[in-house]
Length: 110
Image (cartoon, rainbow, N blue to C red; front, side, top):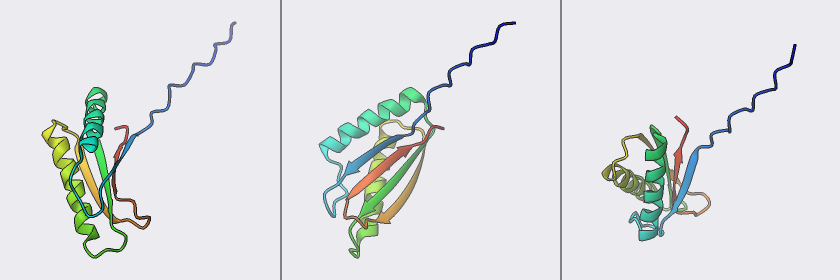
């Protein structure tokens, strides 16, 4: 009786992760940010992904950092929705301890 060869495991599915950099104290989407978002939107659509997580960071202990962080996340969310993303979008806002002004977008494999 012949032994069966082990079947190769399917490649591990890695979540999509994108980091968008913002100007300090600004929630405006730059042209470069829009290009990166458009690339992500295409990938979300092609893969049929159902969940998007936005983790927005602002300030470095500045009083309005949470407001700026929330405004960034909402602007990114609005852009995604306006471009037809139907995925569930979760938002988290944080004060940046490292001074990096950004929105991290994580699309888990759902």
